[in-house]
Image 1 (cartoon, helix red, strand yellow):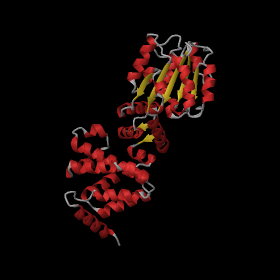
Image 2 (cartoon, helix red, strand yellow):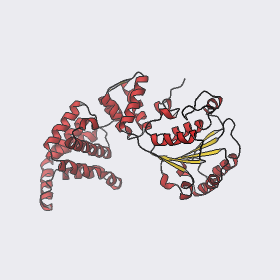
Image 3 (tube, rainbow, N blue to C red):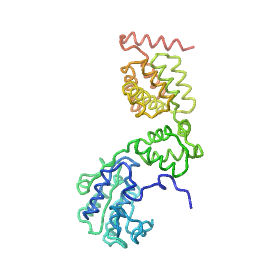
Image 4 (cartoon, rainbow, N blue to C red):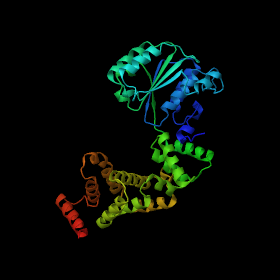
Length: 382
């Protein structure tokens, strides 16, 4: 059998396997149990949060002959027929590549035909926001007066691009980003099932890198497994994704808070010479100051951050030496750079300027601060 990516191999096949979207799963299950199937649904949310997976489960469940707790049984003839990618009752349409009015008119003609195996013919339209205005107008008529056997599930990551006329005819479900704990639990189950060694810190890091998306987290996990040959550690995850080592960030943050200009410029130069991107360095450094603020203000910082003991110990020492005002000022300054990089012709100079500005004493006048900065820069120039 050919290799399957983790996010495909472990895609949920029933509602009980879905994580993080309880509000949506409960509503859909109740509709199935009460036989109150709507004719049009809108699934909206960030990528990798389960929109397509739940759409497929729902499509099979409303056609299943003997659903188990509103989930498809997987054993009846209808379920088996619908697991076939070539079945004619679940039609997946990629609106990004089929966005013209001609394709939607063709859909309107074919929707008249009844399902082959089940009770409903389900159309899953992915990235529906990519449809043209004329295509939306053509789809609107079908959504207004669909055949009794037709169910439409529209999925999108950019719901603001949909016309109000489409939104008003759909039952809308907003998919939320998943919590790190939920993704960590899934990763551990997958690693255990695949006989992959791991530690808790590495799993926590992979979950954070997924940023609430299961698919992104599983893609990162797959890359780390390949890099480490099934022995995933915290340091190996850092190496696999090309992230900047937390100890390097800790040193850079320490130099910024102490105002050591020479060390700051040398550390930045060393990081960038290794091929790191300035915008990513700024983002990672901003996140480090955010985590430093958590350590400074929260008693349960370890439960929130889930860092290895040595990294957390360094952060605790640095947090004790500096005020929360100074830490938050650095976090605010670095976080604002993301938008400025888009319009800058020299991102490195912009980054260095803002970082060096953080070393100034804000209690000084503007002229004094400029002179102090000039003196520090001149001290490191040949």
